Image (cartoon, rainbow, N blue to C red; front, side):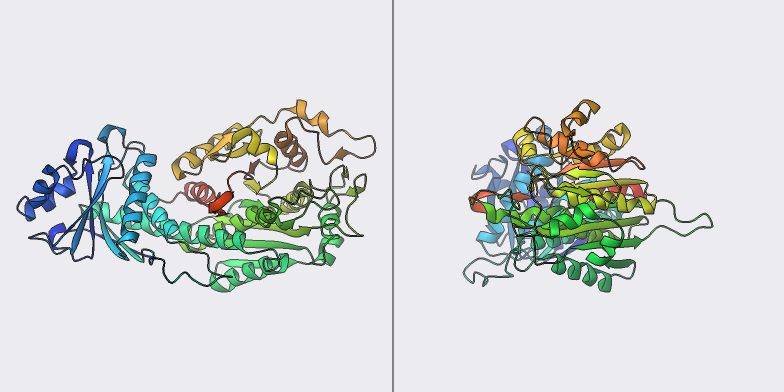
Length: 502
């Protein structure tokens, strides 16, 4: 989707559809008042009919109004001005996007209202750009496009009332479009079936990003290299698959180079299980097809790296994706097996369906070599996290209070929220094993917490946080599909860390 920022006299703006906001009880926004003056009061007369009250999401389309260049005007209800926040604005704009699709409009001009509470102009524009791009997403890789479906919005112009605002809005639109592109990539990768999106396919997509962006260096470690590094935990998972494991390493060099170097990089690690049948501890058949989304953490790392490259952020970022399948086979892990991780710690495998932590622990040890400023890993790790938090926030686990506050604030700003869970030492005892340094599960109680506690044993040398995205990476049921989360959250963290003026 193409985005533009416009300023100047709204009445003279040529567009197939001009979107104007109206508050509850038919109170006009400043932009609507300006256009109404140009129409000689025609919009005011229309509001007076009561056909639209200004309730949240109300829509009314008017055609061929006098005195303006727009072919039609869409009046959009924003609800009560004092109650307008990001969520309310999002719901209202969703209604406008739906109405545009109904009348088959593919190009529109949005005249912004005043920023809602909790948002500035930059945040509002970026959020609306992302929302518009998300609404245009269509999965068509393995099915014919629906020719009867209305075409999605292809071009959106956003009007701001002064040139100073136009500069900030332009920056916001660029960032929003970049983040939306990262989300699109993550959604596409997640939605692809496991017979197409294999570990080798993920690796090829990373290489394609490296060919597209000059600041991005890609390295793919094969199984022989992982074996020489001692990645016994990761490789124990891939033994049950005919697809070879890959360790995907993406290095973005964006920080200004100085005599003292470019500083420590931010490191993102994403679980890349391209299909998870559970191994010998096989999953129930119902909804097992959704286990193609078990690589959503890895997909979000690829999507975030693409967004960072598009924004050309002045920061060094490294993305690492351990990729494998987890299938039952004669060579697969068995309950009771003991494997040795890259860190030298041994692991008793009590449940082969707790495999994500096995591939992540070796990746978390591997990234020590980068001397990271901080490491954030993300994984569709536990169903227990969905039981605890539902499908709205991602679970956040860290012992670093400052990092927790940073991630939480970024999630609120990005509309990609997290909720911090405990990670106390008391949970570590649930991982005790009579035969190894630790077990790979800690029982039913606090399953998401003990999974994070397991990972924490491999992150002692750097600031670290774990995001359990099992409830947020995809939508289940009739509307099944990948969400692209937590790309918006990660992008927000990196924008803030890079010091870019927003």
